[in-house]
Amino acid sequence: MIRRALLTGAAALFALPAFAAHGIFDVRDFGARGDGVTLDSPAIKKAIAAARKAGGGTVLLPAGHYLSFSLRLFDNITLLLAEGCVLEAANPAIHKGGYDFAEADLPEQFQDFGITQFHCSLIYADGADHVSVIGRGMIFGKGLRREDPGARWHGVTGWIAPRIADPKEVAMLGQGIRAIGFRNCRNVLVRDVTILQGGHFACHLLGCTNATIDNITVDTNRDGIDIDCCRDVRVTNCRVNAPHDDGIVVKSSYALGHKVVCENISITDCQTSGFETGSVIDGSYRLSDYRSVDDMGVLGRIKLGTESNGGFRNILISDCACENTRGILIGVVDGGVLEDVVVSNIILRNPVNHPLFIRQAARLRAPEGTTVGACRRVRFDNIQVSGADGRYPCGVQGIPDAPVMDVSFSDVHVVSSGGGTAEDAARTPKEKREASLEVSFMGTLPAYSFYGRNVRGLSIRDCTFDVETPDARPAIVLDDVKGGRIEGFGAGSVVQKNSSEIILLP
Image (cartoon, rainbow, N blue to C red):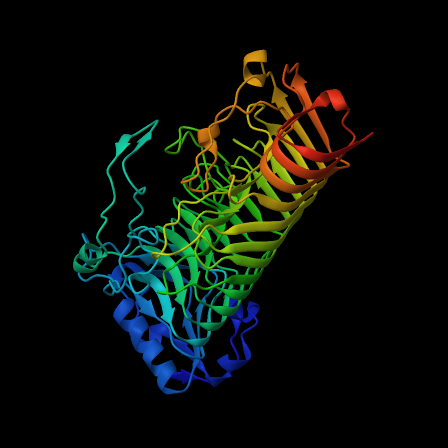
């Protein structure tokens, strides 16, 4: 059953990791049918067990349609989905069996639903070394749970039922919640696969080191790619469509039971969008009418800091294109320090809210004694934005006892709808100290290009902010900003409140 020859045909298109030389384990040799009717997970598990016994190898799913519940990978195992392969998540309500029981080892008060539960995934590994999911096949999460986190209004279907909140209930029902999940793994590779409808998390890494996610396509109805409490991770050449939730998000949650810094993360040459689920894969790119809980529209953004217990450092987001999504949002709300972040060479088309925003708050969903975090040394450079909503300019929002520090915007060019009124210019946006990362609560901002509040050290240079219709608001409003250098805006274009040491240059 163990094939030690080189792959031929379509499978030969894939460069296998070095450790795959142990052998090729074709799931059809272990009884898999691939007919879209037979539940093939028992046969696939036998192939995985044989590879594990041999010390590792490549488990091959040739072209075909495979129904499956949970598949756990182990050290030195590659799961290869060949071109023409569809691995479909089975539905416990229809197919006999269920997903592996979810872990219920941590309460949910310090992190969102599902972040600590990995065993209830379609494909997962826990504590494995040198583990991969590769190939040009498709993962179809048809049988995975994907409800929104709480009852929400959807313009087509009406109220969506709230989720099951108790992880024990998920375990009891044998439900699956994600397509791919790796927890506490080392030397991880996910490459070339396509994920359609990935459950709550299409591709989720928690506590992993030295991981690469490359050239995958995700077209899903919740989160696309989640990087949580990880170190040395590269996300490259990926295409993520996620209208109902975040496209690519970096977190440092408390899901491992202690604080872990998320560091040395690069997101490069990726595309995110918020079109109707499935319409990127089929090429129709249909607009989604989904409106999130704040009634602002789709999500699909690149975001850093939804959960921030451990903090972040050395993060690069570069050479990405984002269309019909929310803008890039960065910050900390649960303690932790965010520092040394660069966002560069970005194209944003038709963002539904603020194109670029940094947020510091004190939600502090964290163990007792956690103090307010810090947000410092963030740089935005060479960014082109078109089709922006004039109500929501770029900005930085700290809190009085934790201002955002050392922020720069350079070579940023924004074209927005404009249309702001004198009443908008007179607004003082709401300030919520204990809040999540999202800034939609602030409403229309009193500036048409940039709004800064509670900032220490701000630089804006070589930037342009054009409006398509006349706007009665000033270009820039600074409130409690200490120390700044702003180039290219006249004194009449910058309104300062409780601010000092601001240098205005022509």
